[in-house]
Amino acid sequence: MLSLFLLVHGIGNSTTFFGSEAFNAYAEKLHSLGVLVQLFELGLLAVFLLHISLGLSLFLQNNQSRPVSYEVEKSSGGRTLGSRSMPYTGVVILIFLVVHLVNFHFTDHSIPISDIVKNVLRQPLYALFYISAMIVLALHISHGFWSLFQSLGLNHPKYNGTLRNGTLGAALLLSAVFILIPLCTLLIKKFLL
Ligand code: HEM
Image (cartoon, rainbow, N blue to C red; front, side, top):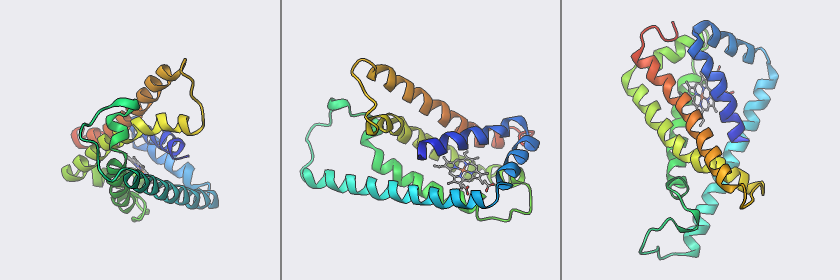
């Protein structure tokens, strides 16, 4: 569900590349759904909380089952940088999310959303924060997208290689969209004009 949300959020946000009018029209269309949006937000909050608590309990379970860590860090058993760093990248994303919601959600919506985004991302510190957080997000979803198929039982030795490459490609592409938005807003004066 979170992967689906990110995908839709990424596609929606990519309207910024077509200018402020397209982006504002997209946001207005979304808000015109009224009570559906509020219901969706509540559902999303519940899914985020569930995701965090399940992730945390898995992390603690892992630690308890092997209190003394391995002497050699090996990537055997399919471990990747993404899978090994999940709890830490997760915490960074959580911090990002709090800042992000304060920036764009719990703010004065009497001005167009394109101006809200511009006012934040034209500030170099915020742009750098967003870009760094999106690099961390890339690492998190590089494992998360793959793991989603494992959780659903959609794996087969014959197709696992393709699945791994496909989910990695999708994670990198989506992260690239998320990284390009603060980068373009900071560097291109005409972006979102
Ligand atoms: C450069 C990257 C991003 C940009 C420019 C961006 C932009 C926005 C904007 C403009 C809104 C407010 C929409 C509105 O209320 O009209 C929003 C909401 C939100 N964003 Fe992002 N976003 C980015 C990345 C992310 C990422 C990576 C996540 C999740 C990890 C995320 C999660 C959310 C959530 C949960 C909301 C609230 C949704 C709602 O209230 O319906 N965003 N974002």
